[in-house]
Image 1 (cartoon, rainbow, N blue to C red):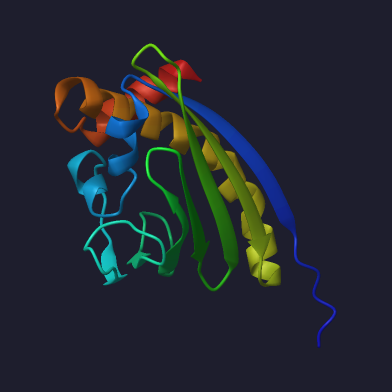
Image 2 (cartoon, rainbow, N blue to C red):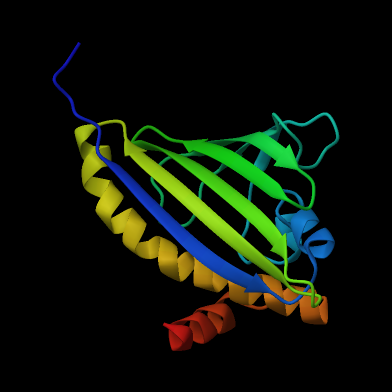
Amino acid sequence: MSNFRAKKIKSSFIQQFQAPPDKVFPLLCPVREYEWIEPWQCEILHSDSGIAEKNCVFRTRLPGETSDDVWVVCRYEPNTRIEFVRVNVLRTMSISIALTDNGDGTTRAVNELLLVGLTEQGNQALNELSKNFSFEFSMGEVMLNHYLTTGNMLPLQESVAIASKQK
């Protein structure tokens, strides 16, 4: 074995959604994200139901990424929690999203991430990647809230502008 030492970064983000968990949770699905995320693209590799479920496997290549990511839904508790493991050639990522009903028709989402470099290049990419997550989670919050309150997708440029103002 080599002397490689994997770098790891832990982060957490809080989001507030303008709907109860039973409206938010179904949209945390690779198929349903087409409804509210521009530009979302994925390829479902395995799902018995055709949507998110435990052991659902899908592939993405997000803008700015140089290789495909393979995602596995490793925990699926409707309206409460969903967890993913996301891997590419440089790093692996564990993403946990826990939803709490605020009791007033809104939802609090606690997002916990663990990033682990798989190569020296992956270790180097982690810092930049982790810096972007805060903004990406802000954009996701803006996009999903817009969809929840209007039923329409918010164009990417508008999402960027709104999330930039919230920084």
